Length: 66
Image 1 (cartoon, helix red, strand yellow):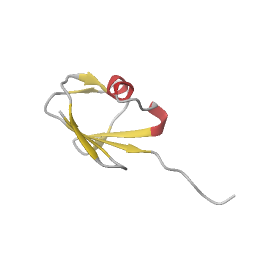
Image 2 (tube, helix red, strand yellow):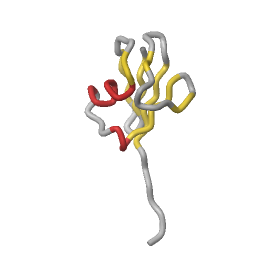
Image 3 (tube, one colour):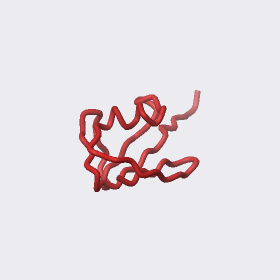
Image 4 (cartoon, one colour):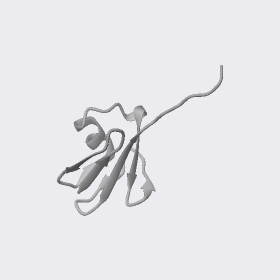
């Protein structure tokens, strides 16, 4: 599968199938700190990603007024 990590942008090839939680962990991210989008759809931790999927990982950014 093609995995695109945003900010900074980098691309990886990873073999599937793999669950979202395992992919995130293997890349060294904390699950609450990223959004995982598979083939254009936001997915949950227990989703299994197939080898032919297009995956995007975006860091969660929050902010606001105090």
